[in-house]
Image (cartoon, rainbow, N blue to C red):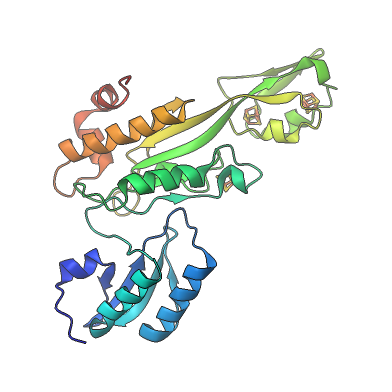
Length: 286
Ligand code: SF4
Ligand code: SF4
Ligand code: SF4
């Protein structure tokens, strides 16, 4: 089959040129690193039919099928459309949102990372932006999904509260706290709130329900990136209302679109305009 698509259109369909002439790696758009078994089977079929019989798992929870001939790109995309599998994106666009398993699966999870990823993906996946824009959601301060390495990262947090009534003063929570923020004084347990990293391990450790969640939060990091010029994401704010988190994501992407220069990542925009100016624009109340 003759393929009349140019390289730009091929990229739009998820086909990334390989170093070998007329061969492409087909990128699939996956949200939060999750894909159901039916789609996996369709990808396996496509890898055997059009590729070299294997798939590549990318560093951002994606899947690519390498070694697809230019002449097969239309047919491969057609098979993907029939299987309801969307193309991945590259270039100056919002990339697929990555996320850990969050509180629906992981013992340590504090927030529903997958649900947040799905919502943000539905809103922004593939949107045109000045350069690439990556979003990562992680369920707790263990930060498996590295929120500080994304243009925008969201991390679940919990504020523990001690309940004296049921406490047996066993000291298990003290041993479990890796930040060494819990101390015992007489028959009282004290948490140093300034040093607490909001991980919730003390709550998990206490078998008497004496350590409880006072409130669950969402910490937002902005401007993170890796690569040739890495920048650690700046902690923007911790919020307790998920709808407000979504508003800040929206304002952040809006600010990026209005202020970002050619090939400038969000972190570079923040460094250029200053974090105070950035906060002024993004943290305004609705
Ligand atoms: S970041 Fe936390 S919730 Fe997510 S996988 Fe890691 S330990 Fe589990
Ligand atoms: S683990 Fe629970 S019961 Fe034991 S000292 Fe800590 S709060 Fe009290
Ligand atoms: S939430 Fe984590 S850092 Fe804070 S007191 Fe509990 S175990 Fe320590």
